[in-house]
Image 1 (spheres, helix red, strand yellow):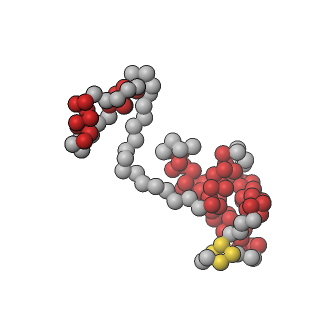
Image 2: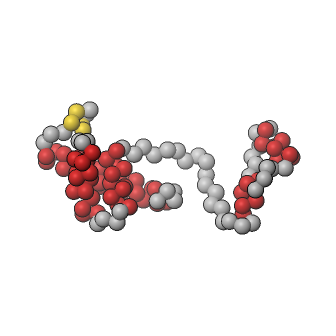
Length: 116
């Protein structure tokens, strides 16, 4: 694609906005420009497992069982207040909360942002 013209390099160094790459690409490839002001989203290990399970196409009623199996395989456990959860009912409730949060909040957000 080449380097930007020197006049645009001067604009860039002076702090002014420069979108020469977008203009060059626009002629051949559609460019979706996003706002630069949206921040990062924090995703825990358990949430990543839920996202992975969802991306595999498993039905959402199987996500809890799938992440439980994946966590066991990885030697990981759910924790609460920094301590491992040993009670099976409490662990299942925490897993279900993670699944619900990912399903209702994080997956829709990631889809809207075009991340998945």
